[in-house]
Image (cartoon, rainbow, N blue to C red; front, side, top):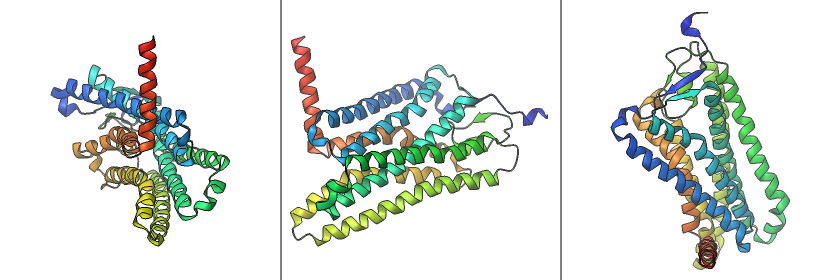
Length: 314
């Protein structure tokens, strides 16, 4: 076989090599972001677990989202931190494709969870008398399992197709993690079919859930407008504001990265948007849900108070 058509055992991540002078500063910043993300999402999970008033369908899905965000940042951030600290840009073939699979599996799972959370809010506002009957424990568990199963089963398709593409040298990936576009840029053969299938699978998972969310919010808006008092309208809308903020943040950054013209992913501009999508969104989600919800604040204060009391007693 020609040397240029060899299937490589590993890859070299370019990362932010053009910012090498700021490597330690970037490492410190991303390390703080990584630790804050893990801490923030863990605190949300603990708050929901410890506060009985948060044992509701909405916060059941919030804990799922927090678990997902922790897994999300652990998929990409550790290698980025290693790259910045040690300049070790190597990533094995197996881990590269495992990272690709987990990243897109988590992304499509998040699309599903956001759609299910919109459905939950729609049921709570549009048909409140039947809400507890519809969104019972069994239904919530089923919907959560469905989101996780669909996300990781759908992610198998682009991963398997990309694994089977013959890759040529040089095996440099101009990114800080293994993603579809930079990997397929190394292909020796025509990848039109692979790109079409990949785009179809990811596009369906993204757009189906987005359209479903829009449909749910149209129903919510209609129901809110039928309320007679402004107080009732404000209360109904306040229950959706955190979720709507997360939806806008997630889809706006995702579309900025993946709806860009082909080939533009190699630019530093698109890498920066990918940072927002992969690093900062997992950090902001727990902040959005905690700072905009009094019950979460009360639960967090309770956890801190008990911890401080335990420290004083010990």
